[in-house]
Length: 451
Image (cartoon, rainbow, N blue to C red; front, top):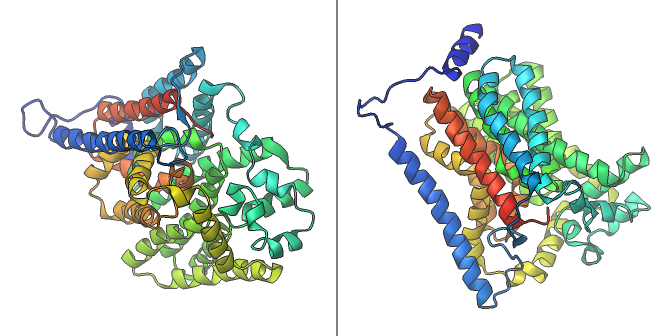
């Protein structure tokens, strides 16, 4: 391990390899150009098509298609904050990632990712990170709960009376906020803390899984890309918290597939329990089970899946005993979904537009990395996340706002950036990391997002 870290430090400090063909051109430069071109083309088509539909009067219910919000370029001195932060991270973090102890890197990555989200939000002002939580969402619904048993038992019948966030999800988040309020943790500040810490935990959990299924060098390479994820723009939403819980669920089951005996069983049960909690935070996140399922199949470990399934059961039983049926809630949400803005949103456009929004959330470096990724172990995770995105897309239950809704899928796709480890060229890593950060700053400057 010491040798690996030392070698990585030497590589990150300036060692590089010559192009294999001796022409002075990087062998994969053409492939990278194609990947970025496809990434840009997808986004451009979604923007132009969306503008065309809006001009024709089609009700997209978004003003900056494919993203929610509206276009509104603004430049101020506050924009220098994320620029300076990103420049520092791009220069320093790859070097640090190759040298510090693994636990320190994971902790540092979490802190820096929170700082990145805060720095990006400063473009919209000092309170921009908190302001979305004042809008009608989970917190406002939680504040109306007087009796949790009555709330849960009547949730399906009264779903039409709640705000769009409550109507679109199970009642798990509202119940959590009600419970924490009972011990003095309440309000916008607490909701903001849950969201941004969830985003940070999701990235850390994904990196830990990458180290488990592949190797530490690849995880160290991916760490800076997870930190500077453009998706941090939308961390001021409950979906960032969902990302943290679901990522811990995935990590626990993946770890169980690599262990034996009682330790494996306990980890699988924990993972199943967390998957159960995840299911009552967001219906669509059950798709993340594809990741540990793929890893378990590749490792030929069925037992952890069985124990994980047992772990899910108590959560469903507890909610059902309290009066809330998950299938009935899903059916009611689906009805409300089609009665709302989704009913007028064209399926064909959002089939492509949602993918474009997700492409913006993961950034251009992820697009290049996916093209370069050859490690089958990493593909089991990245491929599972991509499959989840595709299923969510074709379901038609995620029309618009996916830059927020699909936040839990982002860190798993970003693990593809571990492919940059094979190049052993520090400047190559820093170039793509810089482009990743630049895309995030550009989005934040150009789009006035509600989150």
